Amino acid sequence: MGMTISENILASHCGKTTVSPGEFIEANVDIALGNDITAPLAIKEFEKMNFGKVWDNEKIVLVPDHFTPNKDIKSAIQSKILRDFAKKYNIKNYFEVGRVGIEHVLLPEQGLVLPGDLVIGADSHTCTYGALGAFATGVGSTDLAAAFITGKAWFKVPESIKFIYFGKLNKWVSGKDLILYTIGKIGVDGATYKAMEFTGETIRNLSMDNRFTMANMAIEAGGKAGMFEPDEKTIAYVQNRAKRGYKIYKSDDDAVYADEIEIDVSKIEPQVALPHLPENSVNVREVGEIKIDQAVIGSCTNGRIEDLRIAAQILKGKKVHNEVRALLFPGTQEVYKQALKEGLIDIFIEAGVAVSTPTCGPCLGGHMGILAPGEKAISTTNRNFVGRMGHPESEVYLASPAVAAASAVAGKIIHPDEIN
Image (cartoon, rainbow, N blue to C red; front, side, top):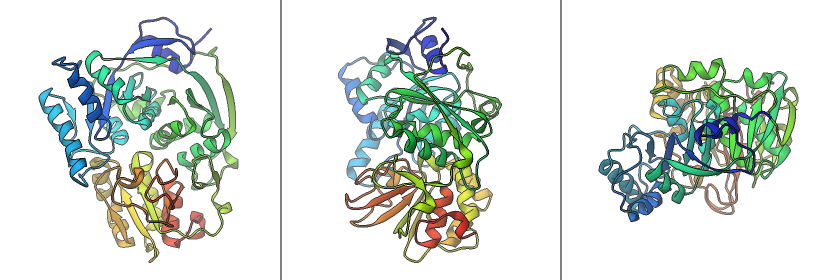
């Protein structure tokens, strides 16, 4: 019996020839990631052990991106804990403000995560790296602390669901729309503790930026991981970034899946996930008359250069509605620089968009875009739970950069075709 890509990676990292769904294993990890919210807890537990050294100072990655630049004294203390730990143990991959990016955009960009890797991160959207053909998943801070010491983590081998996408994408339909549609189809618990494996002709034609977006939101369906088999696009992405060797894993022809779901993308229009769950996805034309107070473009879901290009395409020569606050968060400093080089930042500023340094910012209700009672936001982020972006009586509508940018201009949720 063959194995899926997820099973092949897990087997190779625990020294076994085969593993099966439901089996508990202890595996060697390639990268252990923490941010300014989760790493301080791990560091506290690590120091309690008095171990005196970390497992590998090149495989621990610390990214202060959630409440940075620090919004208050508490967040400054959190960041200082990371900074002091990085200095004490000579952590090579610590990214200070000014060099930092949103972690799940930054690590692939820097070549720190590669195909075939086993990655744990104390952040639920660590599943983003599945776009590279890495098995990547979120863990708790205590598991991260254990990895700081041992370089290992325990796993229950997940079952896999195979999603087969076929057909030609409609205009303005992106990876964000595919994943919102998929979550709408199976629900926020439809892939609980399963690896979501994205395949098919549509996926083969999808850009890496769009693949990152889809893998990023696997957790929104309860997924343990969101997996793409590496292909020529993957190799082209990593070949000039990789700082070490890597191995390509794929699913065996006779791999066994818990389910196989086929999706005809030609039937998918730009999606909007209504409050208060990502599964509440509908065609944007079915949303109705929803006026917005804020539009957010960016985050670890849609803060890459292709996302900014699409938003700029919509906004060029237009103005943000005078009753809307439009905010843009490039995923990294490199994305910001590329956007500057291409003239995108000029387009955003001329349109009336506030352009921020890379930060998670409002996505988690952190800072730089909090909603007041009764306010509504359209956002390219990944979650729209009650109170996610501010007051419990506010509302968040999830969408692609195209829909968010068009809505910022119209002052209400709208299809991009209606203003272009």
